[in-house]
Image 1 (cartoon, rainbow, N blue to C red):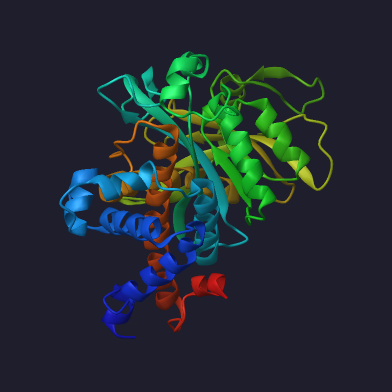
Image 2: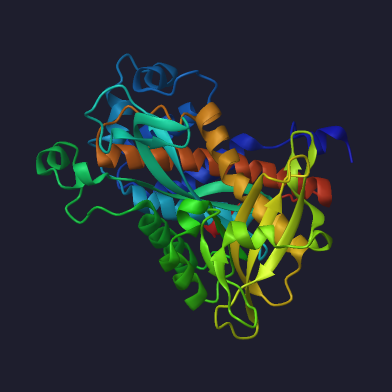
Length: 394
């Protein structure tokens, strides 16, 4: 195989992008908003530094930003319908029985107070309380790559109960206050209902500590590896059915039960940790089991992370370690979408505008993820003459 074949220089990316536009174009009833939206998409994929209305309009050859700005405002199109098409694109390129769903939130720092959902709240992106918006996102990851497949703006209680601000930013009447874990449950349920192939659901401690999420997944026979805090109350599967915390259970693990496994690839090679698991008492029945999974730093054993697990009884410790390491794939999605595609450049203040911008960014990310998946397939076997994503148009 020639270098050009696996390096990407021979990818017919323009034809692939035209195909994506043809499939996404189904959400538009008229030519003008469809063309404007695809100019917006082209701008997101371009190398311009800021993906704002003026810059995107200038790149499209417009003297004023009105046409581009109308994509997020007055033009008529359904962002949720496009989100569903983006999810289909992602699954066509990345779908795999061993794929995983990963939920997390990310913050968008704002200077003003008029953008929908903006408030003084904790942003994991900034690592502190900031004046920001927070969005909950769902990613799909497999051996072929990762991409975002759902998004929803978190609306703080102060916004949800303020009729004047809701009206000014066009928050739909059906949108009530919902916690981030509640939003995550709805997103995950929607993805599973749509038939997304999913071996495990992953999330950090905010979501792992939500027992309603865990109950919902178990009712669906859906395995998960969800992070929890050190003080998470658990019940060990012992003769006395001992109740304790995740931290105390980890303290009691004998030295010989720790094993070194990689939790995925890092910038300097495999991320190696010591791992152990403790069986939990949860009235489980075959073929399912529950564990507390513990990750320990090899350099500083006091640094530990904890996960609650629901999985088939035969699942190995090495498998769980690898699954837990996949939670960072959504961070990679955020990094690429923000650094390259303008995920955090949204100027729209309305509920509709925020979700439209995020959806178009997700479409751009899905396109890039699909190209990367094609490269991986080309490196593993004979290059496909036709992208698997083309089947959607059939």
